[in-house]
Length: 127
Image (cartoon, rainbow, N blue to C red; front, side):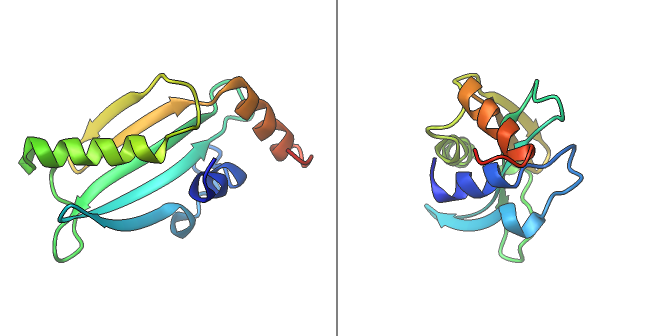
């Protein structure tokens, strides 16, 4: 687990109730694109569906999101590839992709070990 993944893991969002936007968001420049990403852990109170989530969007020169459908295939591929990189070495291999007009979301289920560690963390015990 890398440092960015650790921050998301240690600060899970419960139905987005305690989401701290600045904690999860990062803007990177890669291959001529300005990409906004958010890496989060979503945790239900019963831990039945804890997941890793990444949201990716390309920004224009003014910082506004570009419509996914207006991007060429290479740019869309770069966006998906970076999202998958953010989820390397965590979760299980069951990626789910959702495309919204201005962003791509990728979700991965937590591994059983990660879910157990998260449960301990949420109960106030050392994970």
